[in-house]
Image (cartoon, rainbow, N blue to C red; front, top):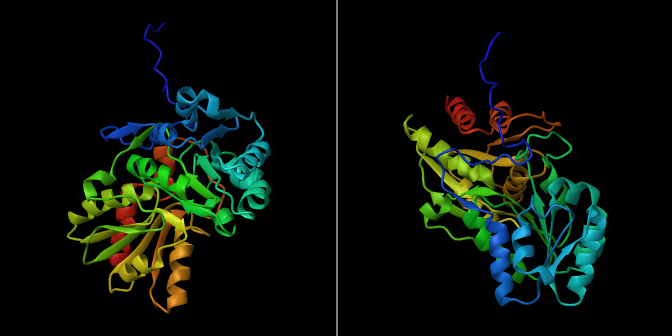
Length: 331
């Protein structure tokens, strides 16, 4: 009879798995920390959630400003309806839930209560794209496609802790509604090494390159930068353009980088239907830029459940798969 100790099970669930590499610099809860700091100087800021404060980092705001925090329970429609009412009185609400619940379950309330009257309500969506292993019920792989068609709504897909931290006050200052694809918990810190600052509505060239241009948003900008370093070992010179604002889209900056002889690739943590790739292709078509664009993103299908590293590899958004795709395109 064996006396060996049972194998230790992983303590991190697929729901809250981190996207950070083991040796990567991170900041804990940049959204909650930035929102709490903003509330110190802006008395209009309030925070709401639909029973997901801990899992959207709203609990940090709730602890520091309990009198301005509202727990709405498991009712996303109520969450956004109440946020609209608060905005009508001059408050600046940040309302958090999972992206799937905001985009799928509460769309009509966000559209007619918030976007149509152009109210300053900031929708904060956790678990965007493939940032959870819990399968289609929680993987918001089509949230940007759903929201891009909504008039007045600004959409932000941040790369890292710096992006999130700097975006919060700008979202609050923006007159109309916004949707933030939230990275929560221990969030990688990447962009501080690239002389970068977040500007709402602006794309930024993070590095130049003569052979390939990678146009990315969200956590895929982190992967794009990693892939660019790896491709250098193959004598491939790669530029990276980060587009954290999906709507309104900075077509001027992106098309300037796109309209060159280089291989052009988009990278997004979202289905290739209706997100960044679509925004880039639409902008190119409007301006008459005849250019083939290779999309790297999630497939137009419901995804599997499982461990995030396995799923990112399976669906082609890991660093190694990005490198393979670029090298194959270069022939």
